[in-house]
Length: 300
Image 1 (tube, rainbow, N blue to C red):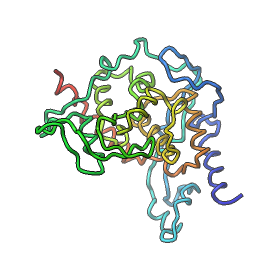
Image 2 (tube, rainbow, N blue to C red):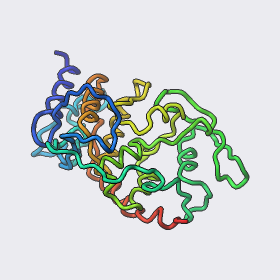
Image 3 (cartoon, helix red, strand yellow):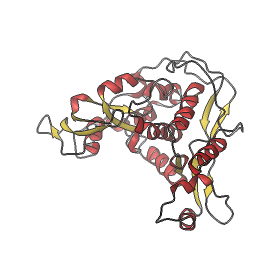
């Protein structure tokens, strides 16, 4: 067994054991999209238990050694990572009970509102336009002199790997779609929290400029029913999917968890990429707290 295979095997043994805080692989022939009326008899949440990388009393995780280069050796890596607290996005808690479901069916405008134009900034752009400007690889043009609506630019569509120049061919995708978030726990939030989620720019890959056809193909489906055709992007895709669910404390159904597990295995994703530091998580949740009134100040 070579080092890469050995590391991956260790990764899977550590991340998918039958302990309460870890995921248990789930087999199902179903690939249907998540719907509010579906009742799953088990579901998962990402474990909010930190582990320590490095430090004199810590057990070194062999997965970290896949990051070594000729310039950075094991000793230097351990020193750099000493006493760093991280959350493992691959460590899940299995709940052997029916997944909680909303009593009210999902309605986008009612539950999540619309794209917001922040009246406190110096632009007339809404969230969609701001994401287009943020992610354009070149200079953008606008449809009017006020610079409210983006016309053209240059965007990488990560779902296909293609480049797009017209904003009319771009849709802003929520990494975890609004309906999926709703049935995964957002139905319990108040309106202002859901509206902030719909317009959230605190985590860069929460909102993705994607080709319109791919965004429509994805719809509200999770990884069990949709994966980007760009194979090189799939590890990043499931990492960001898990990160969004972790930041917002959303759960996963069994088919969704199984699909993530299979993607991680089949595409050789690196476990060391599936981590969020304690500081990063705290920054995200502080950003949410600081901006919780974002939609309400522009409620018209």
